[in-house]
Image (cartoon, rainbow, N blue to C red; front, side, top):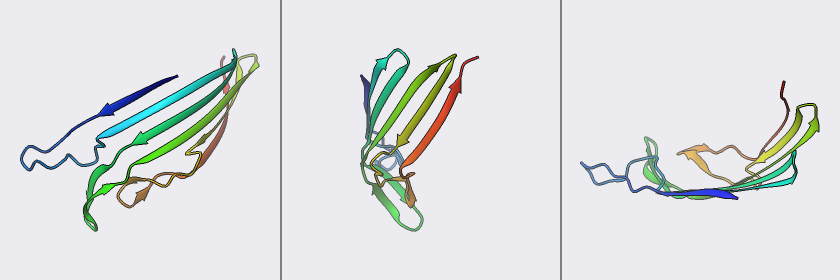
Length: 116
């Protein structure tokens, strides 16, 4: 289990307004569970607080806070091979990367890793 939490208060000195595209709060928590030496389950929670932003069509506005959950599994199959699978944004959380640009919805990936 590990995580991080950051709080950043930023402002433009000349105007006193917050620096754009910088969340005040940002946090993540990760749980990595080793079922056996080569088998892992990982659960990640990612939180981003409100983000002051601006665009030409909308003018200044805040992007909403969000919580995203990611899930991954991996298993070793011997001879340096590992199968991996993950679902990012497990609950298909709706959020914006920038004003008018939505975050990627639920995304699944599968892979094979070989160590030579």
